[in-house]
Image (cartoon, rainbow, N blue to C red; front, side, top):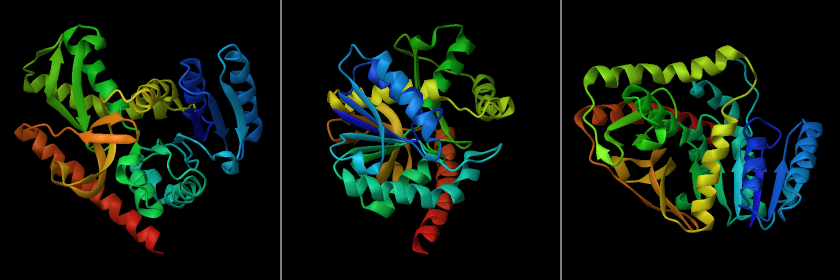
Length: 307
């Protein structure tokens, strides 16, 4: 099992490389970076030593070394200052993601491709549109929204997050749709009152705000590492686990040719199926809002790729 991580010098790619190696989910991990080659090589050297007794080969390299990759994770993105919304990053990242998708298509066309660059949904669509991958072969990483949703529900009910089920769909961003109708605690459905729903919804934009206010130059790399491990495990071991991720839709949730987060059944080869929940009225309104936002972003991608 060979995994390539693009953007591996950064605060998402480096933790991913370490955790996937430490979990023994690959025989080889290729780390590709950008301008910070010294940082990339330092991470590769350090991780290689850390897992030296586990039979995992870690190395730094370039696109030409990607051949034979089973899975590619791309976390590369154009550097940007403080942001209020992930969509601010879209115009600068389209051409970069288009070029990376082309390199993946050239060197390992059969690889399962995970986009973790923001904004995830339109950039996953960029990969699909620019390089001609099958829609089941590519996803955008968005499961952190679901992790955080479960944390917030757990805090409201004074339980551990591991006791909570619940799913987020739509944009990996400010219009994400929290599916309160899917919430269960200890396997039992929970009726959540409107005031509690509102408190949780109001907390969503504060998550990005708190990260940005720290001005640490980092993002949720450790959380992403955990999520990548679940996705990679599902794909290589064909577990059919349901994991929310951004998928290009073909009629699901009433959407066509649009990438958004949905509960996806992951297994060998990629997306095996998409679970379509029956949405409550407020969730249907949320879906309408989020798809309007994503369609606007899709138009920006289409215009950029046509030039």
